[in-house]
Image (cartoon, rainbow, N blue to C red; front, top):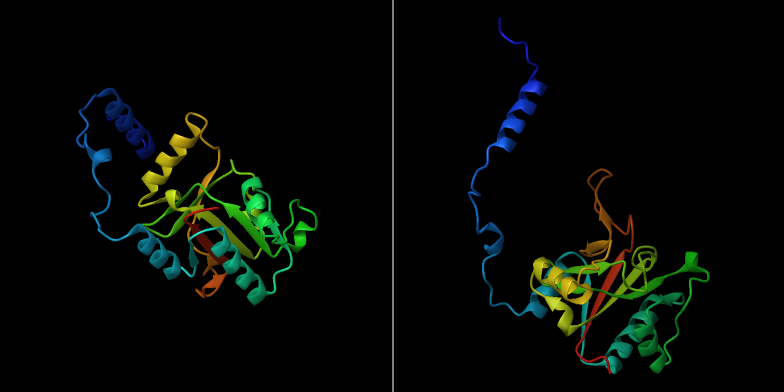
Amino acid sequence: MQENISSKELMLKKIRKALLEKRDNPYPNLEESPLYTPTDEIPEIMFAEQLTAVSGNFIFCENGVDFIENILELADKFKWRKIYCWERELQALLSTYEFPFYKTDKDFEMAEVGITMCEALIARNGSVLLSNQNESGRRLSIYPHHHIVIARTGQLVMDLKDGFQLLKNKYGSQIPTMISTITGPSRTADIEKTLVLGAHGPKELFVFLIDDFS
């Protein structure tokens, strides 16, 4: 008499059998294989092109003075008044040039701009790598309508795997519990396939790459 086995039981039986049978890895060098073809393109140019392609804004600054001049121009253009910055290193930079900002979350529901640092910039796809280990936490990069990211040139890497290596070098075994990437402003096309920016987060993203913080 033939055993009556459901399709689910049959599938589980095949899985158990496969787990018991030890096989050699058919792709032993897969992790070492390059995901992308090699490129000679300059990372700064690639990042700027990719970020711009997804409606982000890239600003290269030689030093702190250059940065302040550019952010003052943006503040005047967008009429920003509620600018928030919670990371002490950035607060020191802004305070040096007497740039006004909020150090606490007072009246945060009225925030127009959040200024944060990042873990890395990924040139390949124009993404910003963030974690919950910085003093800005998660709110400052999500809630305000405008998000400004500050990065050093040493944080610009070619691929995501290089960004993860920076995290490992920085934190060792204490890897942050939340790691995410931002690729351009928040967007959705759920409603009638019409692209809308700022639906679930900032509608404008500005990335400042600073060569020298001094």
